[in-house]
Image (tube, rainbow, N blue to C red):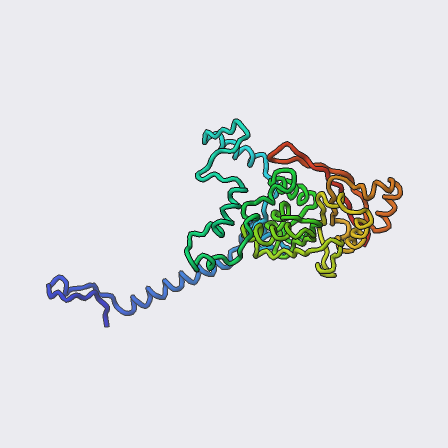
Length: 338
């Protein structure tokens, strides 16, 4: 039998065809199969240089957050000098100038008070009419939160929250799988950055103010797309931490401008309850502004009381702001025994 190229044409030239004998075809197919087998075997048994193989493994491990199992690229915390120069160059190349500290008029300029009045009058500035006007909001938010009045509750720009986050995260050598507790997280000016950086459910907060909690839960988390991070935010003003779980230990516990508004006795009660929740040696407690709850006892008594709790004072640190002329003072502590 012979295989040949056939055609419906009956011309003599086409009838001659191209003849291939069966033995030749079998030999050709067998030879091709053998070559493919040899090539695949050599590739699978390739003895790649160890350094190349390990570097590839390291790259893959780095891309998923290292051996800790965090399946994300690890975010950089603070901007580098190159980052700052990049944005400066972009501002210059676009010919942008802000010579005066003044607000410019937008498309429809409205003050916060005017926005709030609009929200009340038009029930959310709805373009729907009749019964449809109330059927398009899954999580209705109070008007006073929508106009972000709570961003002005801190006596300094809202952007300062990022500065605090960068300082605390780097001073505590945090990773995405670290756990953080904030005492008095307010409207999440700082907490938003921790929640975004940390793994889900790894940020905890104790806060007493209802308006702040409403701003955090009904505006900040939804508007920032962070509901999926499931931070544990608990209302309370008695330094009671049982709702956070008896087995939870933290890499960082911090209080920003909170302890100076609390009775000294309550601060010490809180520290006593927190010691066992702080990881020994590497875990950190940071308190901002001052530590008068301790210094009022006198240096020796203060040190003795801290030592009786298993805490050690590490000293005072400051950090600057990236966007405005400002710095904050922080006092650090660690747990020196298990």
